[in-house]
Image (cartoon, rainbow, N blue to C red; front, side, top):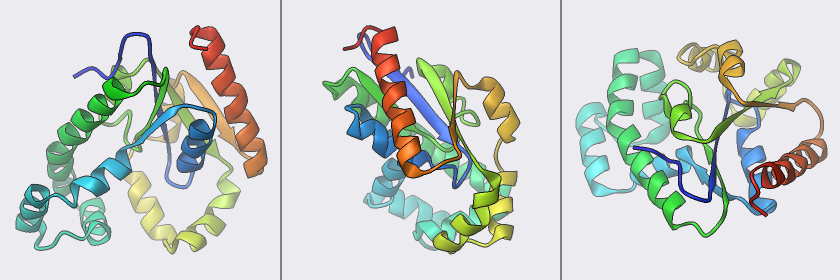
Length: 196
């Protein structure tokens, strides 16, 4: 399945946990982009009876937070869950892209490169953050450093994401600074791709 669409620019957005992907996505929406969050699509899938039934069969429950802890500690379970959910997420994202009247669509996917979906978009952005801010951000999320490291271990190294990205967006200042960067980037994309 291809996410690209005629006369539209489909942008993949990714970055490590706590990099600020969701904030960047919100700023893209403020500037006029259609935005899609893979995490939001997964959350909506968890509400459907068929998915609830299958996941409860595998895990004995259908609570996303508890399942996340389970799958990040056991790779075989994570792969099984991804193999089941990823095609459904991709199908919903593709439908949303086709139906959108907007010319620039930003699809936020934590595992963009790991899933190989970077090959389905027109270009890809990686959000980088200041490593010194991670401990404070973990506290606000109620996530331990150990859990954070465990989740990162199941992902591609950040250096490889940077190597594969078309655009690297540094989130190392204030939210205002990040908002201005996204605004400039959005205008540049409109101009470069003739999508005004």
